Length: 93
Image (cartoon, rainbow, N blue to C red; front, side, top):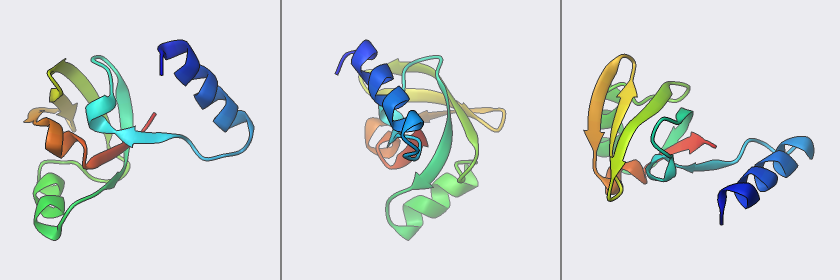
């Protein structure tokens, strides 16, 4: 889906009263700030990410992306995440 189609889809969802679209953090673009909606994965993964500041409602900014791997800023700290972990963090679009 190209950028224009995605924006149209998001605008349509918001105007129809449907909740904000959600996507994995791994799909967020560099420079984009999003809000964490939920964390998927087992208890150990959930606990580890929580200790790093990845909790529901926290703001996350993608600093840069390279081959799906991310450097993000959460609660004032920069954290590197591989693509698999980025897929477990669900954010608002």
